[in-house]
Amino acid sequence: MSVRTPTGAVEPTGLVLQPEIPLCQTDLPLDWYQEEFRPYAEEFLALPDRKLETVLGWLEGYVEPARAHFGDSLLLLAHFYMGGEIVKLVEHFGGAVSDSYVLALQARNQPEKTVIVESAVHFMAEAVALLARDDQEVWITNPKAGCTMEMLAKDWMVMPVADQLRERYGDDLLAVSYMNTSGRLKALAGETGGAVCTSSNAHLVVDWARRQGKKILFLPDEHLGRNTAARLGMDLGRVRALPDPQRGAIHLSDFDELDASEMILWGSSCGVHTVFTADMVRWWQEQGWRVIVHPESPLEVVQAADGSGSTNFLWKEVVEAPRGAKLAIGTEGHFVRNARDQGALRGVEIAHLADIPEPGYDSAGCGCATMSRNDPPHLAGMLDLLRKGEAPDINRVLPGDSVDERTMARDRLPADERELLVQDARLAMERMIEIVESSS
Image (cartoon, rainbow, N blue to C red):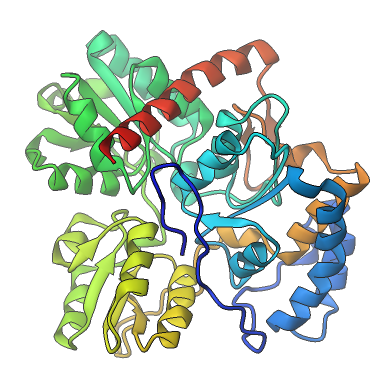
């Protein structure tokens, strides 16, 4: 798909619309939709099938009037992991599809885009909002679209631990916040002199952080943190993971070994990437396949694989593979399906790492369930309601917003607190950009 350039520009994915291929996405129950979106969901559910040409024809009735109404001020964004063919649909309507780093830069790089609609999870839309100007509005098609990793690193979970760490280490603590965090945790990175990172640049950011001579708190994915440490040649004995936050409150008085650590890892992870095992990697390798994985996978999986990297890295491997190559990819299922389509056009075989055709192995399923909450009715409804001036405020994304992915209850900061958060979080984001661009 899109390959990042130093300027954060978005390149076409190269994916081809194939009308006869059905959407790989389960219909959501009607009561999953906000009241304002239910008429669009009812129309969608009444369509005769889920073939791309059927869905595309229905979507055009809502998307094209919105595009005509907003003109060049409208920007559609979608992440690689969006459910089914939605990434192709967004790109078909002139939108940008890429990884979290490139998506975060789009408002910053295109000041003329004042109405930005993102089909992705909440932290991604908020990252766009953090770098946006005051006259740029960011909207998410479904506020319930969250991330399992981020759900285990909410600010009310992390901040009590961060406060204990700051009390213990003072100014010697520096936080690196993965893009898969809320703006509140990105602000923690800025406040402590740290930076944001993504899977494509974590090694650059952590290498920079080490040169600051401080103890690093890496939030929130312990697997990306450990894999990054290994990539940089750090002593893994000095990389300590905190307990699983699902087990309750964390009291650092129980962890004296943290004093000798160089990097402390928050204990959450991605449910999509933790299904992979080193045995899966070896099975495909024994069949003559090259295995590449995302670095949110466990360390033993990354070490056994033939290569690892961000979604941009994985996609580049697909589009540059020679005819006859066989690639088993360990990442989100929708990405792999799109890679399989692209590979088939070029004579390259693509398989999902977990889809081993032997007893004892279970398929990984369709992909990230929370990302898939952004479906065609949400895109159609969001654009139509915006055009009419009737968009629900809950879909508007402001920095610092905290949304409960189950109930859609929102905690929005007062204006003065939001301003302080933007200062710190934007500082951390801009520091990441500076690190990445200077390395190019």
